[in-house]
Length: 557
Image (tube, rainbow, N blue to C red; front, side, top):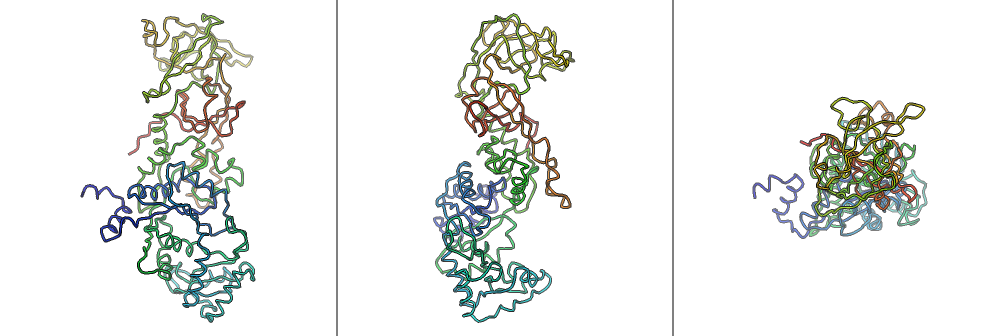
């Protein structure tokens, strides 16, 4: 038991302590509460995995709640994408809820706070309010409206709700402490006027609750036992608790906010504002561009839910922010894809190879393993003929003894096929190699059991039969930024670090099997890397995205 306790992260330890101190395990409930103002990104995967992981560990329900308190930025599109992302990661939520479900209750509680002299209507601008707050080392200045009569604030607040005032002319503020060193406690705004339609409530509301007011009270309404959020909200916790004090009833679960460190990954940014800018300025094709750190982008690139969850598990739950090397994420992507990817033949920079002593009208269908890592993956047939495509970089007219691919006078094995020997080349008017001519050893067919088939040569090449080749578009993705921390240099715009070579599009050929593959299906282009079919693909124009390269030598600590 002592060994088990040592392995708990600090959040699990908090929960274990609460259970030991009398919290009924059946009262445990968690939630993932995104604001639907953008697509989820790699940083959100940590919050998702922590909350839903705790739900799985303790057999507790987890709500998916949308904190939709700002109609200026929120859209149904983002709601739909968030639901898809959570489900794709393999998690099931107990209830789909919205902060907007509680707008009436939040309004009623705010009215009661005015009656209890805990809130007041302020007619100052946001700039004036900010100026009066001063700084943590200097007492703030009280609003001239702070002590206005309760009846006056009640009347004005109702008129605000009814849309009688313009945006920015009034707000409802909590009356707490203008001398608090915590700036969040200096009479925070609870409601502002926003005459904007809401994606769920339509035109009903002309005022909307601020995040801090709606968030904690929504947790309370849902009886969330542990409200887990990122470290940036640590100094909001006193306000979270103060608001809870105003509505708490004895006998109910008193929700507890606790914070964990955000996750930052090299070569990625996780600011929604900056991601929005990438989309708006067309540095990428959209929120699901495979170069984006969004979950939808990673899914389109070919990342798997298991790889992401294993990555989050390895990163762990910390109290201090840190920068995670993207190579660790790529390590887990490769590890999973190696287990599940179908091995296929594809050539991305083709040059023609003609086997001169192979009969012109002959073709064979050779057996190859779908995945040698999976004994249940089976085999399939791939076509072989006299004319093939191989990778241009796999041939040199002259090369030293360390070049184990094809060279004039040298031998290699064509994977799952025969041993060939390069005899001569034909070049175009620019001196580029147009065709390689070779001969083959007809007794060296892989798996035939002949002595020649067992003969060892140092190089093995992948290939595609020219007669059966499927023309494919191949998108070679690289990192979106040229520097590991594009946000680090504050005096420079992060857009200055965009990688001009983050996408290279080439035309290649693949074996016929690729025609019937589906977007998201994991594939290994043998000797090249891991790929998946893109959602832009059509029957006439199959497109494949490189998910990640083959082994790069990275070993996680």
